[in-house]
Amino acid sequence: MLCGLISIGISSYAQEHIYRVEWKGDSVGYMIAKKKVQGPITNYSIESKSKISMILSFEVNSSYKSQYENNRLSNSYCKNILNQKVKGETSVHFNGSEYLIKQKDEEDQVVKKRITESIAALYFNEPKLNEIFSENHGSFCPIKKIEDHTYELTKPDKDTTLYYFENGECVHVTAHMGIATIKMIKIN
Image (cartoon, rainbow, N blue to C red; front, side, top):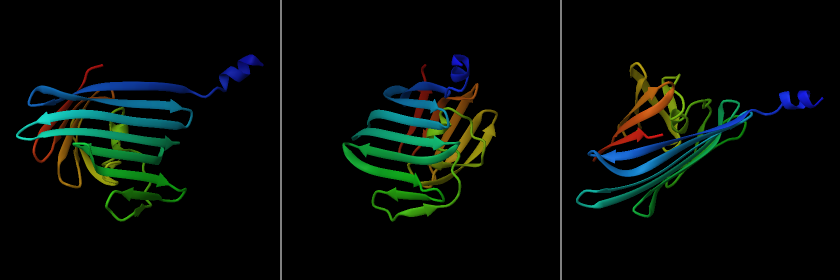
């Protein structure tokens, strides 16, 4: 009987990736991506802290949390802080038939389309679709394969991010933003 109880146990595992954040070849911060699976529930989180000094100094802190149930996003929360001021905050909640999206200083939105891939999950899985959901922007973003294991994501503001994969895991990210190009390189 004990063997029967052991064999029906819930599968559980966790992964963590640490990335060095670079600007112009210098280390300016870090990012930690985590994935935790417990049966049908998968939780992803991303925490990053960076400080870039140009003419002005920019301190950027970001936090993503996403939960999937049976391979469908059930809820997420994203917060971005620039120089100790909240610049963006987005929450997503699936109510059983549609997603309610709330963003700081924006009108609430409703999305009926099923969400099965998002930015937070991208650090652990190569994309399978031609668009993925951005927890930060609260919308789908096109993503295209530009060569084997390399994908380009285009955000609503038209900034692009390149994701490079080895053995199914994201090992390098290059984010082209308006004023800078930031690289994130996996170090563990």
